[in-house]
Length: 317
Length: 245
Ligand SMILES: Nc1ncnc2c1ncn2[C@@H]1O[C@H](COP(=O)(O)OP(=O)(O)OP(=O)(O)O)[C@@H](O)[C@H]1O
Ligand SMILES: [Mg+2]
Image 1 (tube, rainbow over the protein chains, first blue to last red):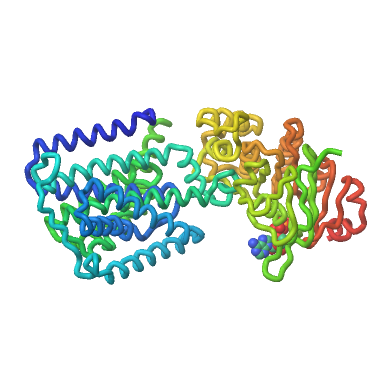
Image 2 (image 1 turned 90 degrees about the vertical axis):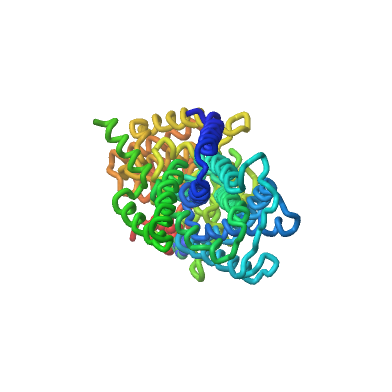
């Protein structure tokens, strides 16, 4: 597929699926579940830009998600910011924090970097818990009094549509990063940072681009969360579930291309939604853990990697 | 006399209290072939690291084409034309051999118009270099699975792909068979035609004497000799410190 066709195709497919859903499905639970799966697709896609393409494991995805969510809370409290305005501002805030955090932590490698991101997440959590303007530990309400814009019949459907478009955007960005000159530089960093630098790759600059883009997309995925739930509190927005899923989904789907996080998030996200209604959400992290173990042993390169091997074998025989 | 391409003066590098390099002067002229020898741990790789920017030296100045390299990160130095191979090969292991060469072609070497290459252009040029190195049959293989000799060749090929003016080869022949050594020497001798100066770091004397127009000797972080290969080899201090171990 030609690179320049990818983005239009992704957006067209997304719009068609959304239109089909809006025309046929009336059960609001569907939109709630789909919204959450889409949110995970963005988180996983964003995580993979830094984790899969660049080779830096971020354990603090929940913090970037929360940065997006709480930026929206602040904007809503200040001037009742509408969703289309909250999204870019939230993304910018999370992107800037990604840039700053990257600057402070990227000198660390491997597990030390991962621990630093976890620590950053804790610091931000403590900050939010103690910040009264956004409700502190009690949380904050966003009460949407107006009807949803653009003729949507309710807010859930409206935010589902917005989330679907953001997902298409995130995938287009991830695919662009992966296939561009930038992506080759990131892959070189992932394989050997010293050799990359000695081959002309400005490693620090590229890593900062990676943390910024990854952080911004995570913030974007969190920006609509307060509007969707109409309530946010730090324990749920900083939930370990976001950080763990953002890692597990690309691991299970495959980390070397944009399709991996997408497939992993659809699979894991859907399973968790089903378990949540049929059994209990308490099982979710356990299921993620079990699936991780299964995949790490049986398909260490994820579903996409397994698929590539299978294709290569068929070509040979 | 041709102007000097690389002029390092008084380069000092210490790790804690241990001086790996002490006031080393090292010069390379355009297109010149220089051998750099010395016992294990004498500071050869450390000198390479200081020149290419992988390490920053504590004292001394390093001029390349008359410009001071102080404070320039490694990626800026290779863009100016200083390429190196690593003593222990460091391939981009998850990439194909061809893609390994794409990295410097896309990131280190501007085209003549001062622009960056396109993917296709980089691919074509990478293939050309692989052909010269006799690696073209392995272009699509994952570089992580290559044999020792092919890894050494890949190191040199990737350095070449940066279109350097100076290539520093850090023990590209260690552990290779005699035939394989000849292959690498032929490749390095071929650089002269392209106007590339080569610094060859090697323990194999036969290779160094055959290859070099000039030889410098490091012992315990100090340069003890620098001159024509046969003169340097006859130098009693060199015999004592290096050959007589
Ligand atoms: N990063 C480092 N930290 C501490 N000591 C170092 C470091 N790098 C090199 N050294 C020490 O500096 C000295 C010079 O090392 P260097 O690798 O430059 O030697 P060399 O001449 O390349 O040796 P060889 O022929 O074995 O490759 C050695 O004693 C080595 O242990
Ligand atoms: Mg060495």
